Length: 323
Picture 1 (cartoon, rainbow, N blue to C red):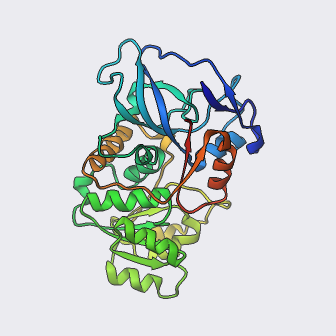
Picture 2 (cartoon, rainbow, N blue to C red):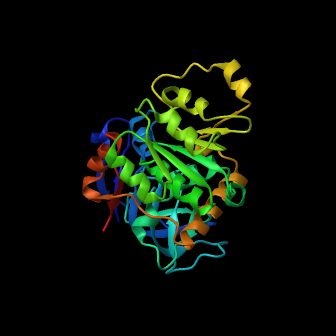
């Protein structure tokens, strides 16, 4: 099979596309013929060595993807050859990521993909959607009638957070930095879109809701003042990304507001919480509540360019197509 691999950490030049023997699934595993591979910031960070060490022998990158089950290992129930699935955390403790014609991964990290959902949409879920679902508490029923603020509403996690929150019947405001990004947040279903650079941003958000119940946050240091302006007793600020410099937390103000700071990294989420996020994402997908951002599609041979596009912050979702 053709696969992207890297044998040492470094910039995108360490990636190559090679012919590898097609792996067979072991107990509890399935083999998926990958139609689309989703690219996330975590992929280039792992390859560069920012979030991990060098691989043992080699690593096929990318955590997310979508395709068709091609083979089933011993002891697997609920998955069968020919089944359409989307994949998540494929490369976690596993050398067979989704940037290849085939990936072998634990069956529990594959989820049925409805016939009406495209492979492109399936490959866009995974890390962004599961992160968003966990940021929102993992339970759509608990969101009904609440107010949610999504920072960075045009990013992959922000896009998923808006759509999942709307699926949970919440009122959703989103912050963005440009008109172009604002259009993407509105297309995802945000009830209010605010340019956070405007002096009136806090006033506009308070007019929408005097207190946000949940804030999905990607840049706590930059946005903390705005978050505090719309927080109160019971507000949960879920932080899923880190900045170059850690923010200084104003402890007394945080205590006075009686809010909660919730930090998360998807790879460390407890199994039952991860499964709650998967269930919510799957339910929303089945209801037709999830969509893709504008797509940037690269052939496997240009996987290095695909990762560079994500690293440079391209607007939209980057996919790699192996075939």
